[in-house]
Length: 101
Ligand SMILES: [Zn+2]
Image 1: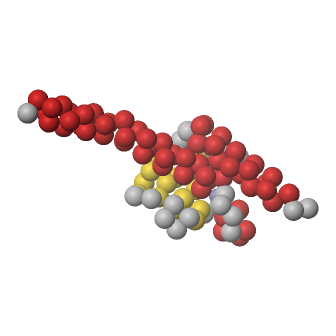
Image 2 (image 1 turned 90 degrees about the vertical axis):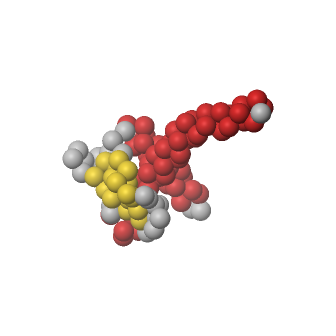
Image 3 (image 1 turned 120 degrees about the vertical axis):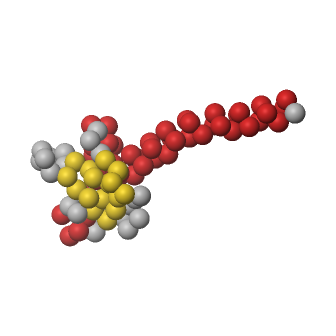
């Protein structure tokens, strides 16, 4: 049953994606995020991306990359993309000044 792990792993990523899409993730420190539980309302998990850890049972007791971790990773890359949308404008302004000179 070598395939079982692969299937479970992709399912966890998919759940992470669902969690990310449903929103509610908050960045509380440089690499620390609060991710809401998808099964229980009003429950949130602290995810530390630097240490690749999460407070939930899945992460602490099974040592897996849980769905909260995946959701936080997706949220972080979204934040980085959002930051890049602002950054190019500044770069182009700089280039324009060079051309005029
Ligand atoms: Zn978790």
